[in-house]
Length: 100
Ligand SMILES: N[C@@H](CCC(=O)N[C@@H](CS)C(=O)NCC(=O)O)C(=O)O
Image (tube, rainbow, N blue to C red; front, side, top):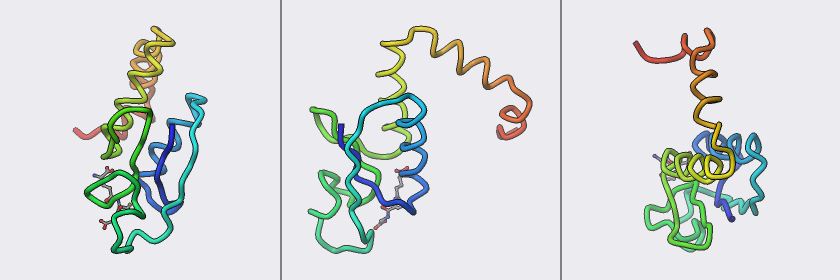
């Protein structure tokens, strides 16, 4: 798996937190300047944004889509993931951060 990212991108950080928490092996590719005008700098993302994930198929972009992809990947290995996430969502500090 390859993740095109920048260290200061909060969208990238969200994905990196999941990769780290779920112990997924990834090659991190810092694209450098997000103001770059060459699309090559962003890897295979026609929108020229980070993060972008590559995992042997078509490129996956938009951090929420990447998060869902990673979740599905991990869930296949750990069928109880859904239960664990549901339990976490009921914790007061997580519940308090949910929109009303
Ligand atoms: N909705 C996208 C937003 C991604 C995004 O806007 N990334 C910024 C960096 S934090 C970027 O690449 N900006 C470059 C640009 O818009 O030209 C996501 O969730 O991944």
